[in-house]
Amino acid sequence: MADNITKKDYITITDTKVMVGGKETTKYRGCDIWCVKDLPILFKDIQTKVKQEYGSAPIEMHILSSGTLCQGAKLGTPSATHGPNGWVQFVFANGTKTPWVFRYSYSSASACAADCAYFCGVSVQLYSDFRSGVFGSVADAITPVVQVKPKVVNRSGDVTTMEIDFGKQKLQFQINASLILKHKGK
Image (cartoon, rainbow, N blue to C red; front, side, top):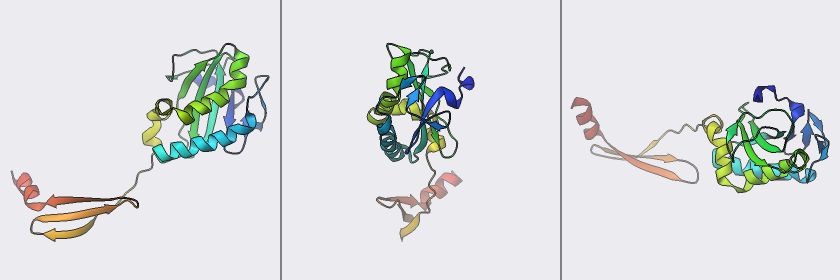
C-alpha cells in the first residue's frame, strides 16, 4: 500500500517551508494546517535532536493522513486514502527514508489533516521512545562512520598504551604483545 503514496498525498516539512505536492501551502486535504508557520521551526529542533542522537539530521519530514489504522509507534504500510490516522516518515540527505510510523488516530479525517503535522512533530521532538520507533530501523544507514587512527602513547616491555582522540574525549587502551603471541601460537 505505501508504494502508492505520492508527494501530493502527504505534507512535506523542511526547515524553511511546508508543502504538499512540491508546492508551498497552508492547507492539507482541504483543511487549514494547524500552526503551519511554526512547523519549520519545530522541524529545526527535530533536526538538532536527531543529529545529536544519530549523527545525521533529516532534511524532510512527511506527514500522512491515512485510512490505515495501526497501534502506537509501529512501522507500517499506510494507504494514501484520506482518513483519521496520522503517520510520519523522514528523509535524509543520503536518500535514506524511514519507514512510515503510525502516530495517532484522530476523531475524524479532517482533525487528522489539520493537527497531525504539529503533533507528529512534537512527538518526535519530545519522546525518545517514539524517535527510536521512527529512526531505529535506519540508524545504521544514517549514522556516519568515523575512522580513527590510534596513536602510541607509551611502550613498556610487551605492553603498548595507545590513545584515540575523539575531540571532546580520549580513549586509552593497552595491548599486551606477549598475550597476543601466546594466543596465536596456542
